[in-house]
Amino acid sequence: MTTALRRTGAGLFLDVRATPKAARDEIAGLVTTADGKARMSVRITSVPDKGKANAAIIAIMARTMRVAKSTFRQTAGATDRNKTFHITAHEDAVTRFVTGLPAATGKNDDGETH
Image (cartoon, one colour):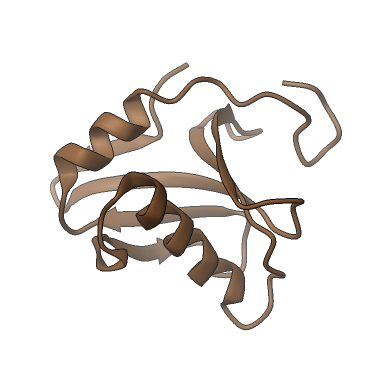
């Protein structure tokens, strides 16, 4: 599986697949979505209402990677499960964390085991 990180002329970007209303907050690993992209799977207990889930995703990523919340600026997917975040600082820490993730286990949103 490839990485969920992409470097462009504008900087480093992280692709995320969100699962709201999960049993617990966690970064579950890497998944390949139907569009063929590798994404970091983030499960959150928050509901997708008025940005609560997006804020929870940023909080769990910051806490787990031990960086400031301001490290992540959402650039796509405000109302979609597939999201993109621009990494504004701590690129080395984020890169080390994401490249060390295993493939996620369990079932995807369509009920298929991965």
